[in-house]
Length: 252
Image (cartoon, rainbow, N blue to C red; front, side):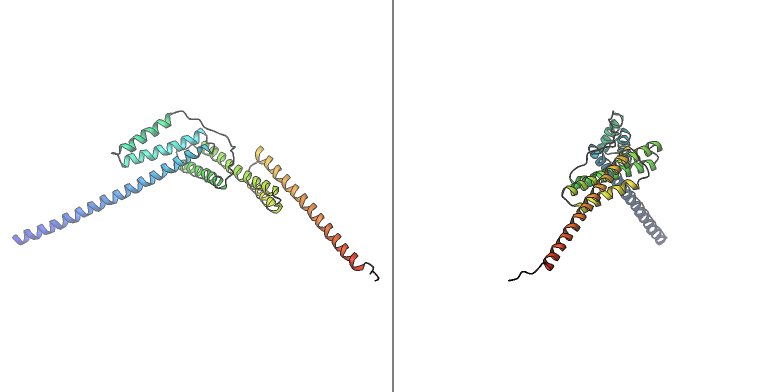
């Protein structure tokens, strides 16, 4: 009888140990998933805040700014649910909510000033690409109206086009000023190829296409003139050589 009780106690202890272990593993798994989700939401907030900081260089409409602000708010709300005892997160969530209700000034312009530094130019392009990515993500979640999405994405697309075309033209003009005609032609041809690849046309694209084509025509004329001059000099040199060769020999 005592042996049976001892065996039952041992079995019970084993079952309890296994249950405790399973519960502990489940808690650890939940904690790992919680931390993973917190890190994910934190990254979303950091990227969104970086985009807002870059808004000083990129013209951003009120709709776009609100989309970014809402993205930050939603991420903070998720973090508060995951860490309900965190006062810091709750304070940040309240601040984010206040920003959403505060008035905001947007900029619907499609023009911008290109930086002279290539590193800054690359950063500007990356910023616009990130904005478009965020816009697509929020639209995919059903948080952005399709009409707003199409309008904002098209505006950002035009900004990318302007940066690409303007930078190529700027480099082409610089190369031409340095008498690097071949390089200048390549830059202008790239700009023209970019303009020709788009499926729409407007006042800006038509004006830039005419501008680039005029540069290419001028370069073509310059190259023809340069080649003609070179051929003329070569012909004159060959004639001089023949004159020397067939000139009457002097008698000594």
